[in-house]
Length: 219
Image (cartoon, rainbow, N blue to C red):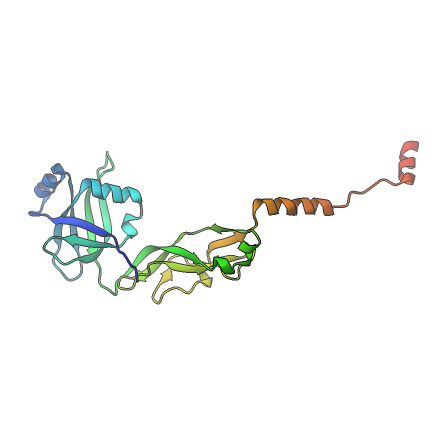
């Protein structure tokens, strides 16, 4: 299960409607609403600069947050919508959904590589080319893996690891319906160059015999 779910701090917003939302924006806040979980919706404000930084970091809508609001129990939420100004493209409102422990959600889970010491390809000077350093999975909110471990043990130059080679946590499934590559072990550039030279050396260049040369001179 994930060791650390990032906190998202917010303030409870007094008042609802357009007037209260405009007042929040004048104070440097982004108004929002928290819904779901068989609990009444909660109106909140989030500091504009904090939200903008998280949006620029990417994957805001696919990140699970631990919402902290004074006077309320912490709750896991995921963003369902961010409304933006049509001209400035800046956030003006957001919707957060509470999650139950058995709720299924899409999240990007980082990949952790292990077994480097048992990888023949690396021993021979090969390098690991990472195709995906995180995997988009459907997971259960109450059992989110911190990382997906990918073993390099036994891999030689030219081998790769696909999603079908990985034992995913129980209840987790990839969102992509094909056997995609996570990483591969490739030869270093120097070794590739040597192989190319060897290939050239193996090519036999035809030579012209004396008889053929003589016939050519007679022509």
